[in-house]
Length: 170
Image 1 (cartoon, rainbow, N blue to C red):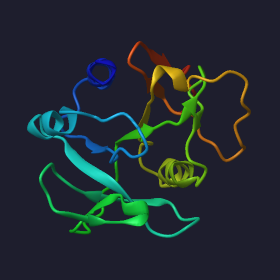
Image 2 (cartoon, rainbow, N blue to C red):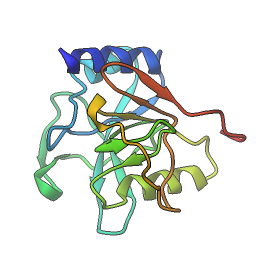
Image 3 (cartoon, rainbow, N blue to C red):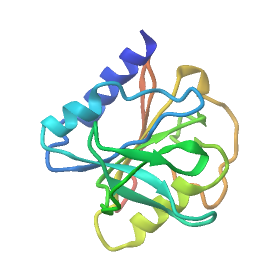
């Protein structure tokens, strides 16, 4: 039930994603599933991409994928698309192990999403809209983000959405 509420809320926060390239993730370690949203987004005209770990310390590579496309086990056994067509996401859905009300995110400590967002923010194109998904229990008080951490634009949980205050230039 909680996952269904999170999926519904995420769909509402994102709105129409037709024409967008949406980077999703393959849930591991109890992360929320995106349910039927990826299929609905494809049917609405969005392209999907899955993150691929290239190397430790490197940004993620986002590779085209559609529900049903073949995958192979990648780093940590996470399914990776067989075809290697790279896409630049315009919307990035990011799993959160923890987060705060200012949309700062904690992950598993590899820094992959932070490096990827930094690279996408600096490539001269419009920065992607970055939306975290988390369980309600992942809301934390009082953690100090690292200087390399990039706040998300929103974080969605089953019970609410946290929206970051507007930032000039974003």
